[in-house]
Amino acid sequence: MQPENAREGSRAWVGVAYAAGAYLCWGLFPLYFRALHGVPAPEILAHRISWSVAFMLLVVTVRRHWPELRRQLSPGVVGRLAVSAALISANWLIYIWAVNAEHVLDASLGYFVNPLVSVLLAVVFLREPLSRRQIVAIALAAVGVLYLVIRAGRFPWVALSLALTFGLYGLIRKRVPVDATVGLLTEVLVLAPLALGYLGLLGASGHSHFLETPGRTALLASAGIVTAVPLLWFANGVRRLRLSTVGLLQYLNPTIQFTIAVAIFGEPLGPAHRFAFACIWVALAIYTSEALGLGRRKA
Image (cartoon, rainbow, N blue to C red; front, side, top):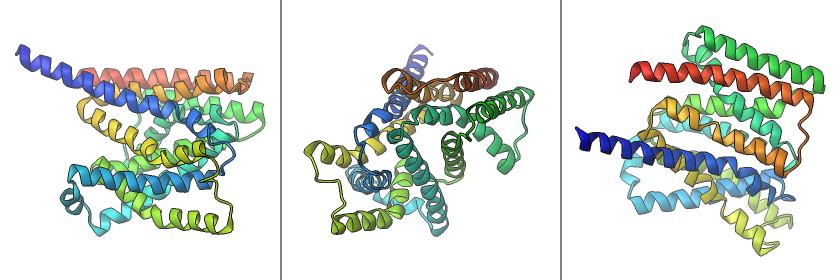
């Protein structure tokens, strides 16, 4: 039994390394996109999609996954992936804009709220029942958001849009029977004609930022690797870990973004934001404690 336990332990640690690496990369995204400050968000998004296509085609070719891709795809699957592609592209666009418009704090709030939004979406679309702790957690998060609206005088559309688009994206991808590589390649291929057409128009009109400086060109060209590698790491990690462990690790991303927003970018953390974050952090503690307890009971 000891060798078997050792193998399971090694598998779990490898899974933690993959998943933590993915969340660390996503948490550092504000530094990457802020380095592209001055490039409009739609242009960055178009490069992100286009270079992701190139990188994922290379990955599928090197891994010889073309037969697997043909086996997993059907017209119905492609149709659902087209919807998920629209959602993830909207999420990327809002996030890129938020970073360069100095709303990283709002973006981090969105990814803190995302697990609770996912619970609500499961109730609405999958008819999953809410436990008492989940009801309390969602109510606390709602109080925090409402207080932010009243005190700050503005609706936190960045945070809620990011949480909703990513939550809906996860809901659809959960119900589409394809692996991460096939799914991501299909999504970016669906978006590629629009992205390439937009970049072509920018180039023809002389408004492209791609070849302005070597540094900016390198950053835009690396968008495919920056997008695809964390997603592939995440997929490898999830296969090796319990969902409760993944649930804990997911808070690395917004925590790093929150730290970058306040400590590096100097975004103001006013009383309204402090109260809202406090409510949401308590809500997440309640939500996570229940998830961990459920995981232990199933173990």
